[in-house]
Image (tube, rainbow, N blue to C red; front, top):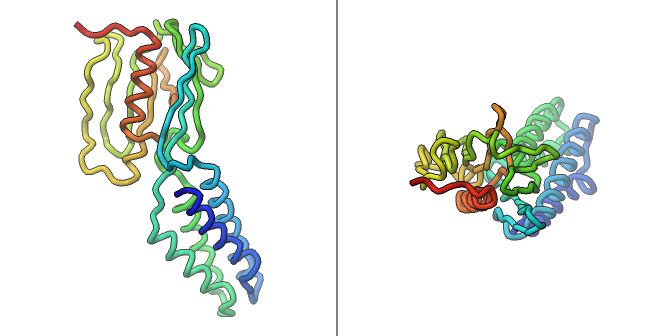
Length: 229
């Protein structure tokens, strides 16, 4: 699906770049703004997972368990995205004085809809980290197990936190709070965090609920966390 989306938006970007005929410098600015936004979006979608879903791969490396987590692509808000592109295309070549200012506003809207990821935790890039019974290594930082306060799943749109592991309680079964009425974006806005030495670290973001729970479970197993009595 991501490949098809990339082709559609790539064609739209090429139309702005090669075929649109601006009649003023302002319209030319609109033309190249849309071309850059659409082509960059097409490039990002083409590089995204073809499954359009979050996934993780685990690999044993001696005492270490290495996890590579690929986030899900954010859903596209089709109506505002398509509408802003159509309106922007109508501006280029219209020849109407100062209409290009409105065209730049449409370009800004397109940028916000297509290129800004509002899920939090830098969810656009794959994450890789390692875990062993002594702690977690992420982004060159080693978090000792004794310093870990809790390991949890967050969703900024749900207004709740699911605690997977607490230093005082072990691994409870977990109760998800405040997840009713999730929107499409919220469904792929889960992230796995660990708190250690008073600081929160995002291990993976841009996940669906099942993938987030799977990642958290693998971390718990690799840390040899005790089950609650």
